[in-house]
Amino acid sequence: MSSTGKERQSAAGPRWTQTWLGGARSAGVDLGYPGERLGLPEQGGGAVAGYGRRLLALFIDWGLSLLVASFLARALDWTPPQRSLATLIIFGVYVWILVGLLGTTIGKRVCGIRVARRDGRPVGPVWALARTVLLLLVVPALVWDRDHRGLHDRAADTVVLNL
Image (cartoon, rainbow, N blue to C red; front, side, top):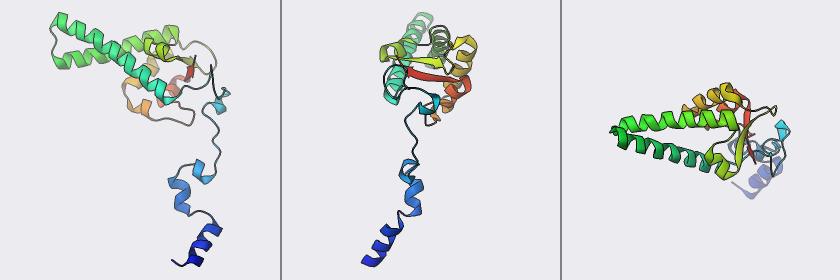
């Protein structure tokens, strides 16, 4: 391509593939910060929790569930598949009860985050159950919106916030 072709391209703006391949921000769309549409602060307490702390909290909670299941497996002489299923069940019940009653789990508390309803009310056992079932299915928790809410959070109308 000649130098005039490059000049013509840069004068006309980016190529159309550069706008959609790079995401909305590269197309010049201002998405704001996570939680802005929900009326939440950008940083500090009450702001949307970041991915890193949420993932660390998940690993801590899963590790605690695995530890309990390992003790039970040893005491009850379970096979590895039974222990894996028990870990999933223990994790589900653990998350359901603690998020439903306290809005947090041990892992979330250690990481300084909590789960709250968007309207400020406690999550409660019914919505915590719906959120937990979707979390156990894994895929809904992997589909996020620009406010860092997975489909499990959207279904329960919850958001994970900094303490």
